[in-house]
Length: 180
Image (cartoon, rainbow, N blue to C red):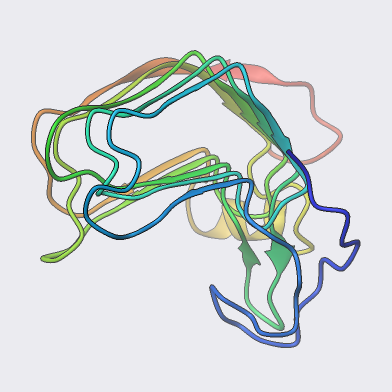
């Protein structure tokens, strides 16, 4: 899956900019019953707004063996937007396993929770993630000043299982090395 829209710079600092026509790779809608039990297996998702929007309503869903790269855009000022996978979960189990994610404008896997956005029963295992933020003009600089962007988890949740290989560079000229 890909988007043929070449525009990667927005004049807005928004997660849903109105001046970009770039579409989602795969978006599970945020409505009850959407994506329940879906299995996304061996997909190639690149050059989209966001690789996989894996919202809480997709109960007992799985992304396995996908190649996800070069997704997102730059906002007007502060940061790159668009992740390889954006995930939330409330009921059932959501499994993200053995995927390869690299070169996003935003993060590799973003799990963001709040009082209304849940991160329960996530299994994020065996993924290889590197160079998140590298395509953004803010990428390496932002990552060095703030935090690593390969797997971001914010908010409360329960029963998480996170494991896998994360690779990093401090700047584009450095060789990849495994983060332990």
